[in-house]
Length: 318
Image 1 (spheres, rainbow, N blue to C red):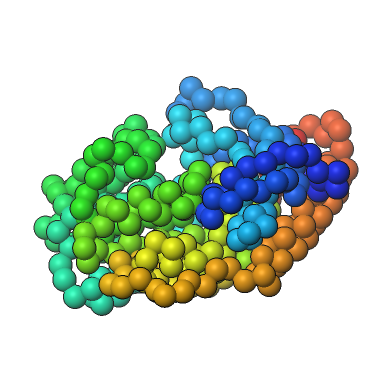
Image 2: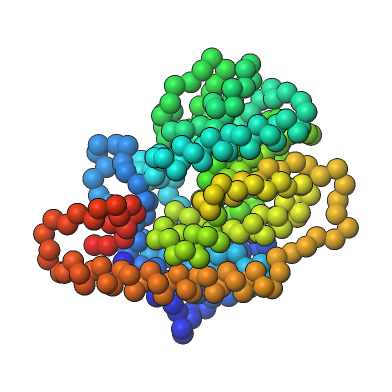
């Protein structure tokens, strides 16, 4: 895989996924990256796919984002499920966060929608007795057993089957995979009942980039919002936001319709916009040098190689 900053940047304008302003040029290019960081659910899928994409930083709101092409068919076959110790704890903490948001709402939940539940739906852990629960994901069949009041829908959000209204919408680690953050968020809001709530979780990209996580920038993650981008987005949608954190791993946010519009919104500050640009540049320099060091250590024809504890690392090196 090749990662490089674009000193002589080509003019490849693109519309920002959040504020919708024009981004004139990409900051870096990633070539030969795995299309999906995961494993196949289908024995007939044998070939790994690699793609090339550009990474941008919006000069207006600072959101880091890519132009990687989202392939729902392929993503439905190869998926990096949230499993393992950290994800078990994440699920437990997000369930507690959602329960608190539901309690503050002060009303029952008659209909709920969970977008992208994968193998560990959050809604099941909420024990919403008697609630109609709808799950929407890309896999053709649900990877978990459905209860008597549960329905699984195979597809991409939004869809006709998810028009709502819903008292609760859940999307755990979904927002960063969406092609247009602002449109996804608007569609979530529009499916809420008058006093409904949305509960979302995203990676804590400020930490992921700052700590130079290998999987901070991937072809799967199309958008990389910081907390400031999430609150700015909620303000533009006239929604009140409550923020929570799971360790340094994830940001939790609950959203409710605001009763009255704000007289003045507070866009992402210049300091945060600069921080995003610096974080991306530093990440590129660190990870590209690491790729080079590992490839030199492995050599051109090493035979079988085991990278113990490498996580996504082994999918970047070939």
